[in-house]
Image 1 (spheres, rainbow, N blue to C red):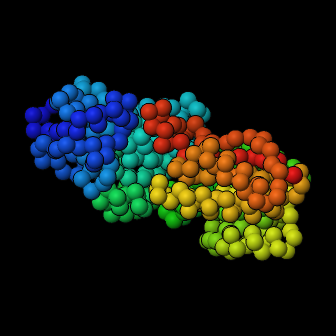
Image 2 (tube, one colour):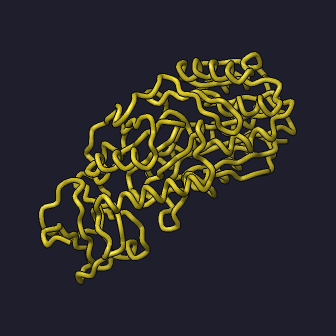
Image 3 (cartoon, rainbow, N blue to C red):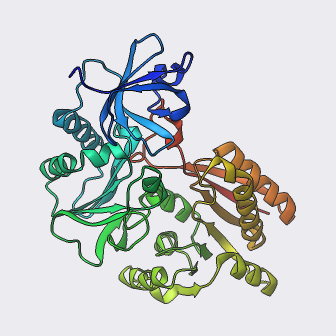
Length: 398
């Protein structure tokens, strides 16, 4: 290690999280920074008595002042380090059988794959990167070269946008990083369902890959059902349910562009004739449907994240309760509600408590049939429970 490498000294008693191998170091734990540390620079983190704890990436603009690359004093942060981490992540997905020609999966899941701030999604021949930390930004060129070498994609595209990047003091970036520009619409196959992905303009990196397995579980309850897919986006749940024998599906979303893509997807899956598409504010429309007396055999609620920080838990919980009260009211007796939260600050226990309260207020009795979570390509490192963000419940409603 070069003698000039900057060093972060911790305050006394602030070593506990790093000793548990948690990869985040917050600004309040830092006593002083020794040496000049630029954004993204590799720094050594030492305890108050000078003992080595970790090596990570410095981020002066963020409350997470450093993200740990390694807890191994003998491991250097260089191109070989990133090759090992990326190769391990790719091999994990290969072993899961997720690298088929038209398949889609999360190839790299940030801290859970030992690469804090980097998300890479694979859509067939294309990779999409989200670079969300100063450390990954500093190694951008190396990471892109290694992904091209390890995966041989047709193209690598970047969707580095949003609040997480801004908290790192980084501007939003979108565009091709290597190879060909992705087509406007790229078809993938997930669970026997054909989905059309807009890599450049769609949500997240083009699609919600974390719900692939859950769509199949929900569809298992869809035979002969009239389905309401609320916050449907491009209709993944509705299409899966129709493939499984649902009679009909109403797709409800506030985005006209998303529902236009959903119309093409449902047609490509030969189920479009059983679909109805409604562009509206979901809360308002569900209230109108409730007042009209319309009911469904299966209601799916897959809303966007309501809670972005700990300060928003109370307000976000009210939002989840309101939407579940409405959803429960729309289920015919004996029918099914499938409800989800992707807010990491709302854990599974709190989410179940919210749904239970919604059932009481809606005057319905509900039984949990299944608890759902994120798939294996979104792993949760035991030392980083924050990666456990997606939870869902399938309930029989009476």
